[in-house]
Image 1 (cartoon, protein in one colour):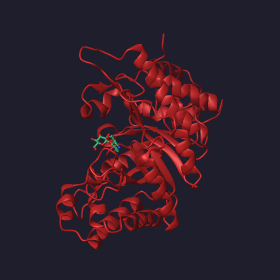
Image 2 (tube, protein in one colour):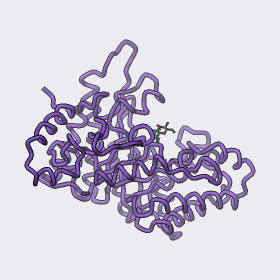
Image 3 (cartoon, rainbow, N blue to C red):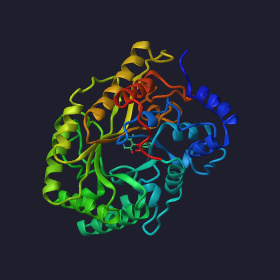
Image 4 (spheres, protein in one colour):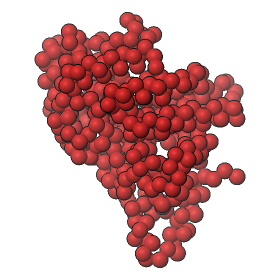
Length: 387
Ligand code: 9MR
């Protein structure tokens, strides 16, 4: 019978009752009921220099966190992962709801949870065409490039400055290239992104400055470009490769390239991900898998995935992790939520789902087992990177 995280929680809780005092002290970093020394935790099997993360929507899951009474979700999040990404809590609409108002309530809750559980935080995101507050959309209609620059600079300096020292990697620019199938093909989003639009005459200069502002606000954070459909070598990643070279030549403190890793079994898997990572690493950049999930088409009348779909899902997750493990410059591997209970997928892709590594009750799927095994094989016997 397959092991479930729920049964592990119960088992560790029982062991905790008979732990001697010295052991209780050693285990105090973990929330009650879940030991971070658990051999079956992803974070404990990862190589020391690889963060293994999950996205979490802190406003929904972490506000009000009580270390002494964590929810089951919080116990798994703390026990399995060494890194957290704010699914929505650091986006413009969350932290900057009005021109002169910054609200870090739920983002601070995420950072506090991460600290309490010896986790790192990946910041997400500072420049994007989605989830901008209404005031940005309205004001941008009449922005000059100088106006846009002033608004973006204030935002970046304030947000990155607020979290100075707390964030190891920031997705500074997210999804700034269109796709091949978009009107105009692969090119910078100088229409959909209000900041790039206002500065369409020289969007790269704006990007260089955005990275510079972020770097000045927190010199220790590694600053990333991040996008979907950016796993393999394709026209979009070719454009990123050229942009990265240009930004570096222009002196931008660009430090990393993130492939989100939102895959679907409706499409094939591009096996050039490792080669893609290697070419960015050769520029001196870190690379990362930042938002992995693998959604499964569930046809009408299909109550769950077929065994074959489940196996292919595990292979795809594992292929992304393998590419990361095989490239020394890969610094983090993050899943975009670990449970189907809270996945963004069904709401956005009707007819697709089952995209994460545990089911709605946090029972590990074969994809979870595949990741754990690969981490274990990569570095047998290592201990957590953080904590
Ligand atoms: O998972 C996020 C979901 O809760 C939001 O509704 C959505 C809004 O755009 O954003 C999702 O996260 C996205 C991430 O920020 C950037 N890459 C794609 C992710 C999935 O859409």
